[in-house]
Length: 381
Ligand SMILES: Cc1cc2nc3c(=O)[nH]c(=O)nc-3n(C[C@H](O)[C@H](O)[C@H](O)COP(=O)(O)OP(=O)(O)OC[C@H]3O[C@@H](n4cnc5c(N)ncnc54)[C@H](O)[C@@H]3O)c2cc1C
Image (cartoon, rainbow, N blue to C red; front, top):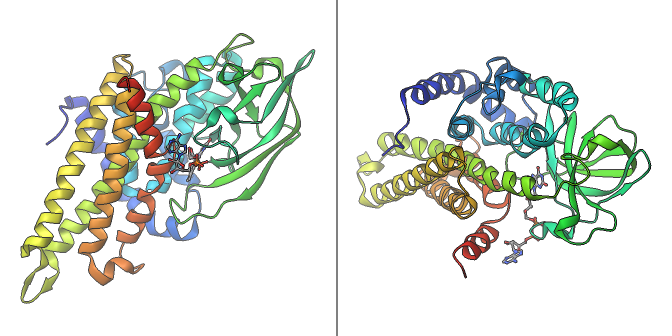
């Protein structure tokens, strides 16, 4: 069962799918092993116009109407090849560059957004701190207003893309303003004195997407680095982070699709007791359950992307899409590993990578239980 894509969207997926099969999948294992960011592939995506798919033509984007549906296809397809690589592209194209597009000055967009869409610059988004994960309003990074600009002090953790980032959208608390009201976004050029990347965090998932700690030590920024200006509140960032959950669902979906396809093929080839393991009802039932979850996640995710394209509020739906595709994708990958038997536990087959990577969308962008919390509030509970 498939979401009713139009012909242009189908053609877009076909072209992209070919690129993923020919360029990304042959490198996926090597990237997972080395943990390296595939800068060449990233640049290639920029040259092919994929990094600008969500943005207007004046900044080198594609100027499409249904930008979220297209962006969801992009992230899903990339994750079918490598979730680590897809995570890098998703973080780059989501909150990090989008807030610059929404609230940056024209000069900032020309200096940072245009090269970012070409693949010449990499960007990151930093809100999480050691003591403030789910409770993002508890961040302690402070922005102090001076006569001619801002001084930022604090630190961040788990910032994806930050090792290679040329600029980072950083969330800080403006001195003297309490609670979520005081939260503001700052455009930080990583060449700014006082900015430092700390330890790179080793993780068992999405190896080729770097994750690091950041430090801001008396980092001085010009006045216009506060995105949205002096009076900005956190509302547009909150809206953006909400829609980003659809993109996290998309990468969960792509990875789960790869796991399901690999398990189905294996079940049709592997023989035991003189027959293919796919002829055993226990294996068939697993594959049917996997397909049911996959289709549910597919339909829900694209339905939600289309709602975002229509400008509708997707707070509840995006949270549910992330639960359905994130938790569902993780279950699919566990079943896939099981179908591969002992071979599933070896590094010779990608089943273990699919399962390891499937944990990223369960946590990244807000845990599944935080998504339940957000949805339940919208349900009036
Ligand atoms: C690989 C990776 C990449 C990431 N990339 C980025 C990035 O680029 N930028 C960025 O800013 N952040 C990033 N993050 C951070 C991520 O968003 C946080 O890890 C996530 O929001 C959870 O925060 P936490 O890890 O502090 O967990 P905690 O908030 O400490 O949660 C721990 C547990 O408590 C539960 N919990 C917490 N509060 C509640 C509650 N009120 N009700 C019920 N249960 C609750 C959670 O569900 C979870 O099970 C990344 C994380 C990872 C792992």
